[in-house]
Length: 143
Image 1 (spheres, helix red, strand yellow):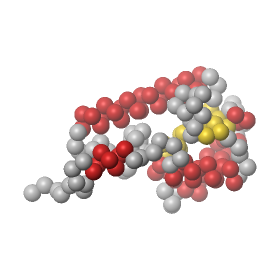
Image 2 (cartoon, helix red, strand yellow; image 1 turned 180 degrees about the horizontal axis):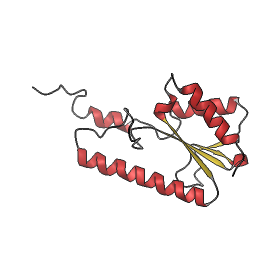
Image 3 (cartoon, rainbow, N blue to C red; image 1 turned 90 degrees about the horizontal axis):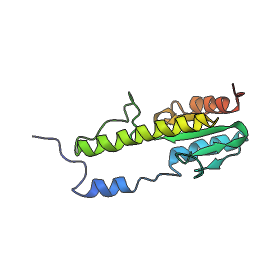
């Protein structure tokens, strides 16, 4: 006998539609930390490809805080293709990954330093280390 469905029919689609694209809990966590360290930034700036979560013009740096599922974090336990509607999800997630890569290349070509922070790196046991490393990376002199 197969595994019982976690959601009633139609509920999964509604649940997925409620996931926000900005001001997520992990994004707010990163912003709060960097602000408390004295860094000032613009958030979700639509003038740049990919609408970076944080733009730090003084440091010529952009930070993307990405969810492991939505951005296909390879090798992460939080990412796996759903078992239902596999073709749809594979196409969608590959398109996200390819778009992310192109946007990162465009920003780097324009002279921006691009930093990506993964959702799994902000788990409680790794959070402080990740945030401190992010801060040091931002304030490091540009090469």
